[in-house]
Image (cartoon, rainbow, N blue to C red):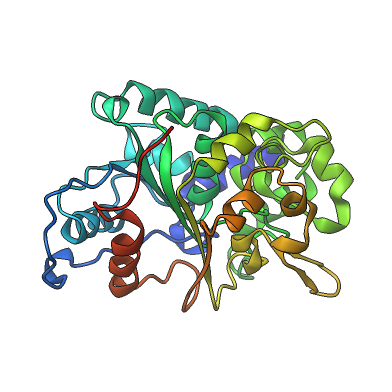
Length: 324
């Protein structure tokens, strides 16, 4: 009980500095270069933020402004699991991810604008990337046309963030996660634990994972709806940060697997999830709709230039967004 109380104290008093994923910094969107305006309206954009951030944060809102400056007329919806910004931030590390995704599915399906459109685009930052993918696999109403993720943990994490020696609150959080990763409490309440995946202990992962093992269709019984929904994507672009030392391993952004002992990297194309097309990645790749991109720098170090380039290429108004 003492350890649990300390954990809740950690969450209540923590600062964003020790969180595994840092909030986005604001951009000055009014400095964006002049752009050619198209008469065609771009699809609405869903944005899911990362750990330690909230849907009202200035950095996130400036990205919405930049999306609209790049593709005028873009309606941006910032995904939230609570209308209160502080509670939304807390929910990034405390909560049941499957329940959060279900709430997001219901909110979007009932939204007065989003519920009326034929399709949307999706932009996921860090853990928000795999959560958006879960939206696609589990509900996808309205369907996502193009999904772009930055530094997401698609194949999980094999390490939790290391704390500094003088940050005892963080150390309590870290110790609890490491010692109780597969407990019912951790798998139903601690968000990072729900996408933890140790390649050297796959049995525990498959038996206890509340979230990631399911959306990656890794268990013996496959959910074909997940595969079919992912195959509907027009494009799926995955960005890995070249100098990412926050997310371990960084190659998880590409669904690659890294041996925790030898550091040998098994690329997506050499894994069963691809060969047997568990979630449609092979189908997307063969159709040239799966992109592996690199973002220079550390985790979530995004330049305005890269974002503008991404918005132009993947979220432009003239891209095919028709659905059968």
